[in-house]
Length: 309
Image (cartoon, rainbow, N blue to C red):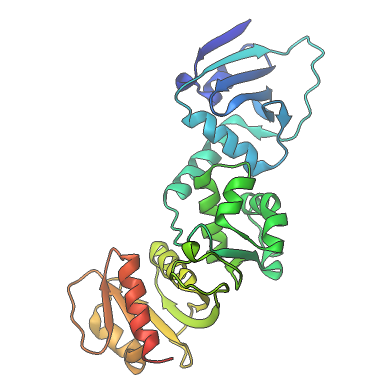
């Protein structure tokens, strides 16, 4: 017995929970993906193959199924493998409902990603930081990208070489840059790829100690992304009171009011960029209103760093 349909109607958990056979395969034909085979047994996905190749990397498995879910032009067919001699390598073992919850969470995170580097920005792995990565999907991404990040690469090269969607790639690069696992480094870049349009063959990357006070992950990602794109390697400190030897202070008022900002950042006014949701015109601080415009943040940082470094 086989079940056939349009890929837009494909509901993997529902199919697996209502099927009368315990072992089977869902074959999906969806250009430009090609052919994806999803093997299951007793309600669990046990293997995924794409164009004949079984996928062993967990992130690649989830990303492929995510692509199937987003496919809007294709067909699927589900067949029983009960009482057959088909030997399926069990590369994964994930409950179908758990799988879909995992993918739903990944989609939410991807949709909220913030990546502010150019495709030609040189990227490299920080081995000591990489050893501390505990998250399964982040670790799976590093396994895919390791050989490129160890020797140095760019976002453009990762897009070309990694077998995952661009938005998935950008999310994990953004996340791991935020965690300091991936950093921009001093390397060769073509003038057309340089965000600062520098004609030099080598783009100097300067260390920068930054005190960043914010509870907003989008603000944090934007700040780190802009600094990285400007050619800085930010050392971010975000706990305790502002450290006295930071090169740059960025404070998110977050409803706390300007008096709070004045008392906390007052001694460092000439090195501070404040961010808030109100119309303020402070005389001593550089002030930006949310939502942050990356170009305005770039200009504010240039102004502050230019008068102090």
